[in-house]
Length: 480
Image 1: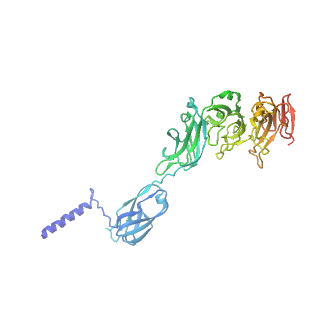
Image 2 (image 1 turned 120 degrees about the vertical axis):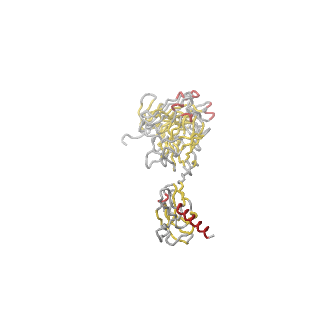
Image 3 (image 1 turned 30 degrees about the vertical axis):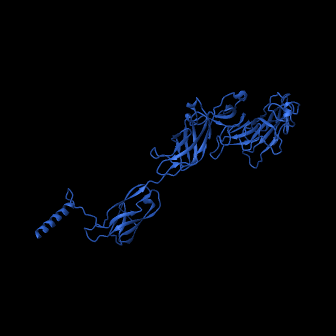
């Protein structure tokens, strides 16, 4: 029996000796410190703040030190089964795997004081959910069979947009119409995305919703999608009326305003030809006679007049959906397209044919002319004819008959301490036969003079006869 026990002891000693040596006869020293069971928490998110890490196990002593990837961290001894350590935000700034162990004080050369190692996971920080505040432009004209050259740049403004890292993983613009199309931006900052919209996406009239998607982890789709309106393409000469309207062009020739057909009504459009613009400019067509939601006017619009730089367009329209509580009949409107303005500018339409004294009540307002800056708009106002006949019996104004007067509207655009007002330029109404053709007033670039057609046309302060039918009205004293 004694011989058996001795033999077993020798065998165990041999096993221990073999287990402590490697192929080159180097001796490995086993860990002699505490035994780690689990960590709390076992993971954190990259980019987080400081936190306390708790290590649970056996064999901790008063001077046990927690090590983070081999580096000591401030440690607090709780008891033999628990210690805590302070982990800083810098420790978890990047995602990845961290190795945690403890070190106990050593008492002899064969005691290394090391515990076993546990892994701590630093998860990637989640991507934020993007948000959209606006898009520009908000509408385009359906390109029909000419979509190959109809692509344009869409600018999306908002927050939490992500630039791609390593060529991937950034924000994506989603174009949602009949189906969803994901578009890779050409440029991305935290607050703005620019993306090219292919012409094929605006081939037919309709609406699309623009959203932005951020990839996982986290991320998601912006909850506030923006509506983009695709209006029917213009048809020159719709109803025989559009052909009568001459186009208007900006002073540099880049922008052209014109009338075209759209779903049963004539509409006013503005074409950016990119003439003289930067190489990145994409030609596009904007619907000017649009409602607040971007849809086309529900009545005929025509007679476009454009400011010198192309930003403002005045026009006449019978549509009642361009503004809330818009008057019936033909009215004159001014559209600020925001072309060339800052990002804070929002396209808007205002009523021009209005005044506080009620002089324009019940009139048909036609043929506007805009000043170079866009501040002043002259237009013709027609009241029902006083002559006997069907028009007088009905008591309604006819666009081509009745008493005609010329007004100038000061919108106060770009002026400080200014109150918008409407001034009648013609001294007295001019009666016209029922089949007469209304004549458009001509406004000088600085709105200092208005040329009027008609024998009874007079000036605001003084007038000059051009011939027996045309008068030049001066709207301000040349000494001013």
